[in-house]
Length: 208
Picture 1 (tube, helix red, strand yellow):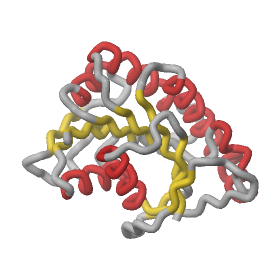
Picture 2 (cartoon, one colour; picture 1 turned 90 degrees about the vertical axis):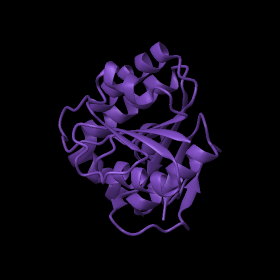
Picture 3 (tube, one colour; picture 1 turned 45 degrees about the horizontal axis):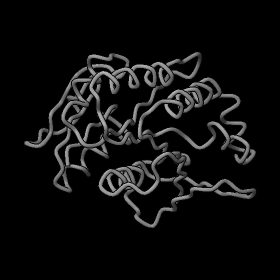
Protein backbone atom coordinates (compact mmCIF):
# COMPACT_ATOMS: atom_id res chain seq x y z
CA UNK A 1 0.00 0.00 0.00
CA UNK A 2 1.14 3.56 -0.73
CA UNK A 3 0.55 5.85 2.24
CA UNK A 4 0.89 9.65 2.38
CA UNK A 5 1.64 10.98 5.86
CA UNK A 6 1.25 14.73 6.40
CA UNK A 7 3.05 16.03 9.48
CA UNK A 8 5.45 13.13 9.44
CA UNK A 9 8.62 14.19 11.22
CA UNK A 10 7.61 14.05 14.89
CA UNK A 11 5.16 12.63 17.39
CA UNK A 12 2.38 10.47 16.01
CA UNK A 13 3.57 11.18 12.49
CA UNK A 14 7.05 9.74 12.91
CA UNK A 15 5.64 6.73 14.77
CA UNK A 16 3.23 6.14 11.90
CA UNK A 17 5.99 6.39 9.32
CA UNK A 18 8.11 3.88 11.24
CA UNK A 19 5.27 1.40 11.69
CA UNK A 20 4.00 1.67 8.11
CA UNK A 21 7.49 0.96 6.76
CA UNK A 22 7.89 -1.90 9.21
CA UNK A 23 4.73 -3.46 7.80
CA UNK A 24 6.01 -3.24 4.25
CA UNK A 25 4.16 -0.19 2.97
CA UNK A 26 5.53 2.57 0.75
CA UNK A 27 5.42 5.97 2.45
CA UNK A 28 5.51 9.55 1.19
CA UNK A 29 6.20 11.89 4.11
CA UNK A 30 5.43 15.62 4.11
CA UNK A 31 6.90 17.87 6.79
CA UNK A 32 8.78 21.15 7.08
CA UNK A 33 11.88 19.20 8.07
CA UNK A 34 12.07 15.47 7.44
CA UNK A 35 15.68 15.14 8.61
CA UNK A 36 14.68 13.31 11.83
CA UNK A 37 13.21 10.45 9.79
CA UNK A 38 15.61 7.58 9.16
CA UNK A 39 16.39 6.81 5.53
CA UNK A 40 14.51 3.87 4.04
CA UNK A 41 14.22 2.53 0.51
CA UNK A 42 10.41 2.70 0.72
CA UNK A 43 10.31 6.24 2.12
CA UNK A 44 10.10 9.41 0.05
CA UNK A 45 10.68 12.59 2.04
CA UNK A 46 9.00 15.77 0.86
CA UNK A 47 10.02 18.96 2.65
CA UNK A 48 7.11 21.37 2.51
CA UNK A 49 4.08 22.64 4.37
CA UNK A 50 0.62 21.23 4.92
CA UNK A 51 -0.78 24.67 4.11
CA UNK A 52 0.51 24.57 0.53
CA UNK A 53 -1.88 23.09 -2.01
CA UNK A 54 1.07 22.34 -4.29
CA UNK A 55 2.95 20.44 -1.56
CA UNK A 56 -0.18 18.54 -0.61
CA UNK A 57 -0.78 17.54 -4.22
CA UNK A 58 2.80 16.27 -4.45
CA UNK A 59 2.51 14.03 -1.39
CA UNK A 60 -1.01 12.80 -2.23
CA UNK A 61 -0.25 11.87 -5.84
CA UNK A 62 -0.32 8.12 -6.55
CA UNK A 63 -1.12 7.10 -2.96
CA UNK A 64 -3.88 4.88 -1.61
CA UNK A 65 -4.55 6.59 1.71
CA UNK A 66 -3.73 9.92 3.36
CA UNK A 67 -2.95 10.22 7.07
CA UNK A 68 -2.82 13.69 8.66
CA UNK A 69 -0.95 13.99 11.96
CA UNK A 70 -0.15 17.70 11.96
CA UNK A 71 0.32 19.44 15.30
CA UNK A 72 1.58 22.76 16.59
CA UNK A 73 3.12 24.19 19.75
CA UNK A 74 1.36 27.50 19.08
CA UNK A 75 -1.42 27.79 21.63
CA UNK A 76 -2.86 31.25 21.00
CA UNK A 77 -4.76 32.25 17.88
CA UNK A 78 -3.68 29.35 15.69
CA UNK A 79 -5.48 28.81 12.40
CA UNK A 80 -3.24 25.92 11.35
CA UNK A 81 -5.88 23.22 11.42
CA UNK A 82 -8.65 25.08 9.59
CA UNK A 83 -6.23 26.40 6.96
CA UNK A 84 -4.88 22.88 6.49
CA UNK A 85 -8.43 21.62 5.99
CA UNK A 86 -9.13 24.22 3.33
CA UNK A 87 -5.89 23.45 1.49
CA UNK A 88 -6.48 19.70 1.71
CA UNK A 89 -9.99 19.94 0.24
CA UNK A 90 -8.61 21.95 -2.69
CA UNK A 91 -5.62 19.66 -3.24
CA UNK A 92 -7.73 16.52 -3.24
CA UNK A 93 -10.34 18.00 -5.56
CA UNK A 94 -7.64 19.08 -8.02
CA UNK A 95 -5.96 15.67 -8.03
CA UNK A 96 -9.22 13.69 -8.25
CA UNK A 97 -7.92 11.59 -5.35
CA UNK A 98 -10.48 8.95 -4.32
CA UNK A 99 -8.75 7.34 -1.33
CA UNK A 100 -9.49 7.71 2.36
CA UNK A 101 -8.25 10.54 4.57
CA UNK A 102 -7.51 9.75 8.23
CA UNK A 103 -7.07 12.87 10.36
CA UNK A 104 -5.83 13.02 13.94
CA UNK A 105 -7.77 15.59 15.95
CA UNK A 106 -8.35 15.42 19.72
CA UNK A 107 -10.85 14.38 22.35
CA UNK A 108 -12.55 17.62 23.34
CA UNK A 109 -13.37 18.94 19.87
CA UNK A 110 -16.91 19.33 18.57
CA UNK A 111 -19.57 17.30 20.35
CA UNK A 112 -16.97 15.47 22.44
CA UNK A 113 -16.26 18.68 24.39
CA UNK A 114 -19.32 18.01 26.53
CA UNK A 115 -17.89 14.69 27.70
CA UNK A 116 -14.56 15.88 29.09
CA UNK A 117 -13.77 15.41 32.75
CA UNK A 118 -13.18 18.50 34.88
CA UNK A 119 -9.38 18.27 34.66
CA UNK A 120 -9.35 18.20 30.85
CA UNK A 121 -11.95 20.96 30.62
CA UNK A 122 -9.67 23.20 32.65
CA UNK A 123 -6.57 22.25 30.64
CA UNK A 124 -8.29 23.08 27.36
CA UNK A 125 -10.00 26.23 28.67
CA UNK A 126 -6.81 27.79 30.01
CA UNK A 127 -4.12 26.44 27.68
CA UNK A 128 -5.53 24.90 24.50
CA UNK A 129 -8.80 26.72 23.83
CA UNK A 130 -7.74 28.24 20.50
CA UNK A 131 -6.24 24.97 19.26
CA UNK A 132 -9.40 23.01 20.02
CA UNK A 133 -11.63 25.70 18.56
CA UNK A 134 -9.63 25.57 15.34
CA UNK A 135 -9.59 21.75 15.30
CA UNK A 136 -13.37 21.84 15.60
CA UNK A 137 -13.51 24.16 12.59
CA UNK A 138 -11.18 21.79 10.71
CA UNK A 139 -13.57 18.93 11.38
CA UNK A 140 -16.51 20.98 10.11
CA UNK A 141 -14.75 21.92 6.88
CA UNK A 142 -13.66 18.36 6.17
CA UNK A 143 -16.95 16.72 7.15
CA UNK A 144 -18.88 19.04 4.84
CA UNK A 145 -16.59 18.18 1.92
CA UNK A 146 -16.69 15.19 -0.40
CA UNK A 147 -13.63 13.57 1.19
CA UNK A 148 -13.75 10.01 2.53
CA UNK A 149 -12.77 11.21 5.98
CA UNK A 150 -12.31 9.82 9.45
CA UNK A 151 -11.36 11.76 12.59
CA UNK A 152 -9.26 10.05 15.22
CA UNK A 153 -9.45 11.61 18.68
CA UNK A 154 -6.96 10.21 21.20
CA UNK A 155 -6.82 11.07 24.87
CA UNK A 156 -3.74 12.77 26.33
CA UNK A 157 -0.67 11.57 24.46
CA UNK A 158 2.39 9.93 25.98
CA UNK A 159 5.72 8.67 24.66
CA UNK A 160 5.08 5.21 26.07
CA UNK A 161 5.47 1.95 24.14
CA UNK A 162 2.94 0.39 21.80
CA UNK A 163 0.09 -1.30 23.65
CA UNK A 164 -2.33 -2.98 21.26
CA UNK A 165 -4.98 -3.36 23.96
CA UNK A 166 -6.11 0.26 23.52
CA UNK A 167 -9.83 0.98 23.30
CA UNK A 168 -11.59 2.17 20.14
CA UNK A 169 -14.71 4.13 21.12
CA UNK A 170 -17.27 5.19 18.50
CA UNK A 171 -20.14 6.44 20.69
CA UNK A 172 -20.26 9.32 23.16
CA UNK A 173 -22.02 8.63 26.45
CA UNK A 174 -22.22 10.11 29.92
CA UNK A 175 -19.41 8.89 32.15
CA UNK A 176 -17.13 8.05 29.20
CA UNK A 177 -13.47 7.77 30.15
CA UNK A 178 -10.81 8.56 27.58
CA UNK A 179 -7.46 7.93 29.23
CA UNK A 180 -3.88 8.67 28.21
CA UNK A 181 -2.58 6.75 25.21
CA UNK A 182 0.86 6.45 23.66
CA UNK A 183 1.67 7.97 20.29
CA UNK A 184 2.85 4.52 19.20
CA UNK A 185 -0.60 3.09 19.94
CA UNK A 186 -2.30 5.84 17.95
CA UNK A 187 0.05 5.07 15.06
CA UNK A 188 -0.92 1.41 15.29
CA UNK A 189 -4.59 2.33 14.92
CA UNK A 190 -3.85 4.60 11.96
CA UNK A 191 -1.94 1.94 10.04
CA UNK A 192 -4.57 -0.69 10.86
CA UNK A 193 -7.32 1.64 9.64
CA UNK A 194 -5.35 2.47 6.50
CA UNK A 195 -5.06 -1.23 5.73
CA UNK A 196 -8.67 -2.15 6.53
CA UNK A 197 -10.95 0.86 7.19
CA UNK A 198 -13.81 0.25 9.61
CA UNK A 199 -14.91 3.71 10.71
CA UNK A 200 -15.04 6.02 7.70
CA UNK A 201 -17.23 9.12 8.03
CA UNK A 202 -17.05 8.76 11.80
CA UNK A 203 -15.31 10.23 14.86
CA UNK A 204 -13.27 7.64 16.76
CA UNK A 205 -11.93 8.05 20.29
CA UNK A 206 -8.78 6.20 21.34
CA UNK A 207 -7.99 5.40 24.97
CA UNK A 208 -5.66 3.10 26.87
